[in-house]
Length: 113
Picture 1 (spheres, rainbow, N blue to C red):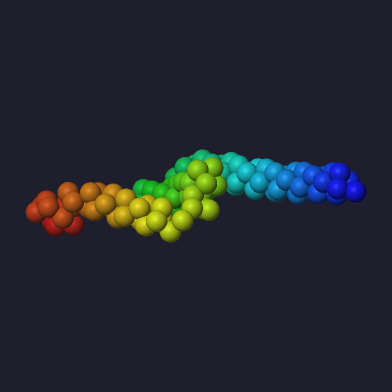
Picture 2: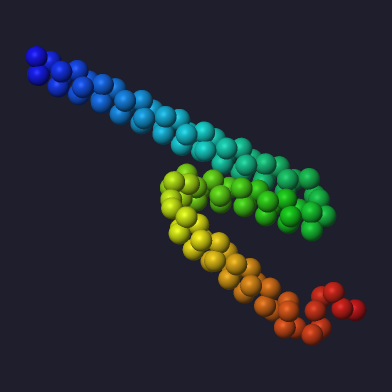
């Protein structure tokens, strides 16, 4: 009786494990398709000959979405602890500060005529 129970529980565990793998594969395929669609959107936007500020804004928005998808799903950051998010936000804040530093320190900035 114990061997039958063990065989039944092994079969249930294998079945659950297979369903779990199928779900993960489905998520990865969905993310891959989303990345391909966003790549096509990026190329299509470049063909519209938009003004440069609008084109750059749209391109950066699409790049942020694509980067977020890659970081969350392929780098498995979506299931991490809060400490990882804190480190990620701190890194992003320092990155923005470093990008803004030349703008804040130059006296003849691009907005002064």
